[in-house]
Length: 331
Image 1 (cartoon, one colour):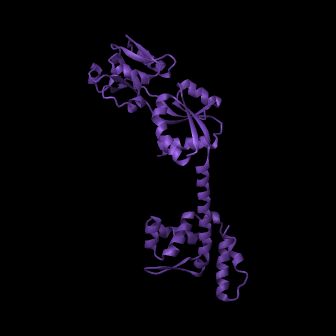
Image 2 (cartoon, rainbow, N blue to C red):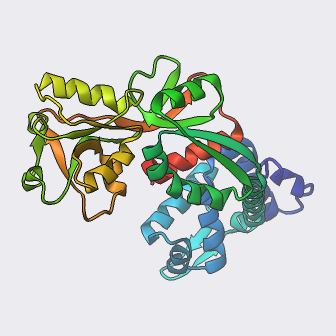
Image 3 (tube, rainbow, N blue to C red):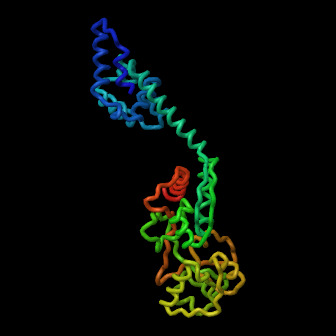
């Protein structure tokens, strides 16, 4: 790039001094690849050239003076030339440094222009993505993610379909949804799963319920009390029933709801206790309901992002996937 163009500025070489300068610049042009030069080093050179002191340059770059010194030394070693003359207080460009400065500035301007162009393209990106999610995951993970996504891609439209976990899985596999948010179990080989959090089950009851006096409860502790459970099509139902049976906890006076989130209103009314997810607990701010961890054993379910394996995401879906990871994983 600019390094290979350095020689074209010197078609003549009338004097010995200029011949030495010409030789140095040709050494830069032909012996070193621009790919070996890092842009932070290049930017440090330009800032130092304009500031004249390591102290002011380091402040402008928000780095320490030793870091700036290492960057300049590395650049000089890469180029094989001395770019600055140094004394105890100031630095001055050498002849080679003065000739190199406009080339470095031009390259940095090209880079900055390219980055601005990419940013502009992102702002103009438009389209639609479909996200299938179980209701609790949609309520917990999506609002914050959508705020982040909308700030970067204001013209993008997001369609949210809240469905049971099995429907979310089917939607992603069929391509009806670009991305899914659901639980990481029984997904099969056609799905990639990025876990966002472990989601242990907890017990919900009224504050004056006998189980509320315990710091934690076991599955067998639940047996004597009416239990509000999810319907048979809900993925939680199988796991909860299995653990109740394994711990010989007979259920009595059972109430059945389609979604576990609906069970909390029945708990508040004093109709029984319920086993719900930590996600649901985190979203609940009702002082008339308390939650206790369930142990012996603790039952987890992983909640995360579903993508079709070997299926390329659209640019819009890829951008949303990156927003999910940025907000909840990479932070």
